[in-house]
Amino acid sequence: MLKGKVVVLGVTGSIAAYKAADLASKLAQAGASVDVVMTPSATEFVTPLTFRSLTPGSVVVDMFEAAIEHVELARRADVVVVAPATATTIARLAHGLAEEMVSLTVLATKAPVLVCPAMDSQMFENPATQANLETLRARGMTIVGPEMGRLASGRMGAGRLPDSETILGAIRYVLGRGGDLAGRKVVVTAGGTREPIDPVRYVGNYSSGKMGYAVAEAARDRGADVVLVSAPTALATPSGVRLVSVQQAAEMRDAVVGECRDAQALVMAAAVADYQPSATAEQKMKRHTETLSLELTRTPDILAEAGKGFVRVGFAAESEELVANARRKLESKGLDLIVANDITGPESAFDADTNRVVILDRAGGEERLPVMTKYEVAQRILDRVVELLAKGS
Ligand SMILES: Cc1cc2nc3c(=O)[nH]c(=O)nc-3n(C[C@H](O)[C@H](O)[C@H](O)COP(=O)(O)O)c2cc1C
Image (tube, rainbow, N blue to C red; front, side, top):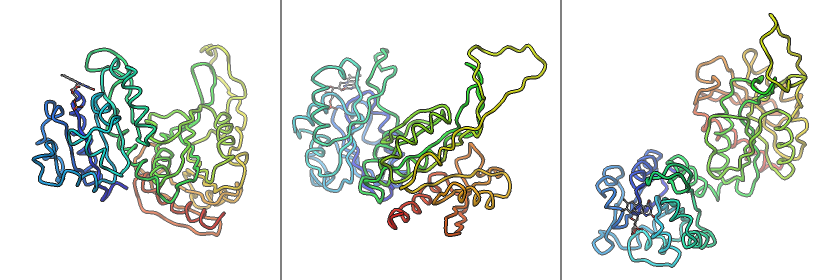
């Protein structure tokens, strides 16, 4: 997705400028061609040499001394990312100034622009900064962050530069806008539901949510409008994805049914509890008896209630008779595809970053994939979803 893309990274004079080095490095590792433009103030915080060492691309500070034409990088860019963006630079961009390389490049480019503000919270909250950001938004630029947290001044507030992963996600989102899922709404479920026993305990499962989050990211990277209905996980919300947080199967059902009304695809990667406690104790249960029986009731069948008229993909995590059990589920639930994974192998265990799956379809087809990262598996599933959408199913 980032392979072969030209990312022009604009670095400005914020205390967070050192984080841009990590971003440049991660972009280069992801296969992007990275050129860096810096304001003179940025070089007070981090040297051009840092970026020259991290990426083979150009690093330009002085437009009058540059070895390339002053608008060359603006023309070459697939995306321009200003990270961190100071209040001063944001004001320059809002006013169309071009007095140093970062604002000149933004003014001269036709590529999408991401602006990642980083500053003290009082500078960020100032009406001048807010109005300038609104101007940039209205012109179609994407504003990423800032995040809440501890600032360089020691105060808590909004002003922190988001981490590199979040900015990378936003770049992927912007670059994916013209992808083969552009204009399609994809609903993805993830995580393991929690069915409450009492105020402190629940019936749960080992699902990490990684597979569903990978599907959400991959769909976003192909231009889809993604809604991620997620049970609790330890994962960060992918940029550009709308998160609906739920706990129980019944809440997940409500969210999925609502979201699927105008969706073109549903990918159910969540590990939904099959049973929930028949009653939830109002107070914390005490350890009085030697044994304790818990009565369980079947949870709603989300796929059955989600409706029809869109591509429906289920997952089957099995510990035995993988393909036979998955095919039974595909047929009984009337799915278009089912992704079967054998949870007994280390490469496809619950918390693993890889998976080994078989994709079964309605026509009896069985696509056996080798061990891949969950993101790669997600892309292969979405290849099939795109095929089905093209056929109009
Ligand atoms: C130690 C220090 C840290 C600074 N950090 C920030 C910052 O995080 N965000 C910001 O908007 N300005 C910050 N400034 C002020 C900018 O460096 C200053 O406004 C500068 O003119 C920005 O220029 P530029 O946008 O051309 O890089 C800081 C200044 C100093 C001295």
